Image (spheres, rainbow, N blue to C red):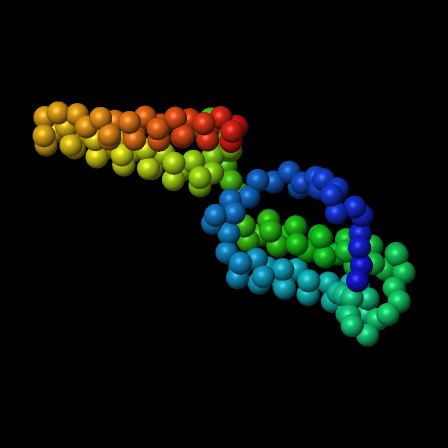
Length: 147
């Protein structure tokens, strides 16, 4: 088993690329990675097949570094080829997450139900209005914590 560096170490995004992970397809990435690994057969054989296999019990630091650099470069190239980039616009909210989406959806549903109740019975429901206010507070709190 190999251990490289402190596991609590912060890893910096070297490529500075923002990928659209929602539209990423694992199959496309795996296929692109296989192509990248086999583009340089001599390097693949010397770094992967000879150094990183079960039968190899001893490997120098230089050999391991070379193999890891090769794998990293292949993974970066495969990512660039197979994962679409995420384009930020002036209205994008990078802090938005699925919890916020569901909280706002619940709030809108409760608000629409209260509005429908008012239109149908021509009077407001205190219970529904209280529920809407609580969900609104919860959604705003989630937005503050997400930012």
